[in-house]
Image 1 (tube, rainbow, N blue to C red):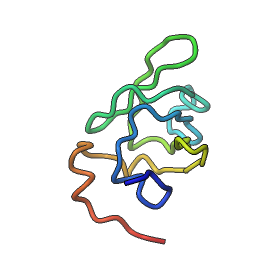
Image 2 (image 1 turned 120 degrees about the vertical axis):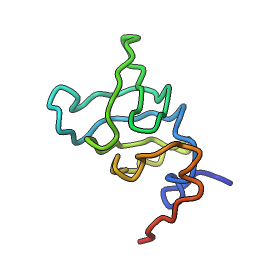
Image 3 (image 1 turned 30 degrees about the horizontal axis):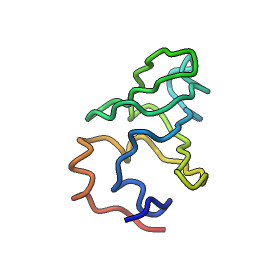
Image 4 (image 1 turned 45 degrees about the vertical axis):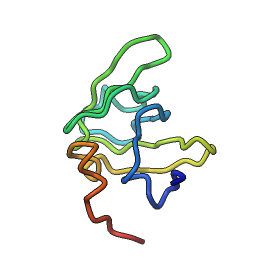
Length: 94
């Protein structure tokens, strides 16, 4: 199944480019990089400088770039939980 803005919550986000557009922590605002790891409560980003930055999902909103170039704004609260359990989760549609 192809990743689209409608089904991104039920797909793997590892490997996608991400930017923190809103955060409770002002130091994380604007942080950008490739998603290296997706755990239950955090996302690890690899920045251009080669640094690994761990971000709490519940504290941020991420702008994800899909493989076709589409940008999707995702509330980190929707991503909280184990990645494998997101498949089972019911998602509100808009």
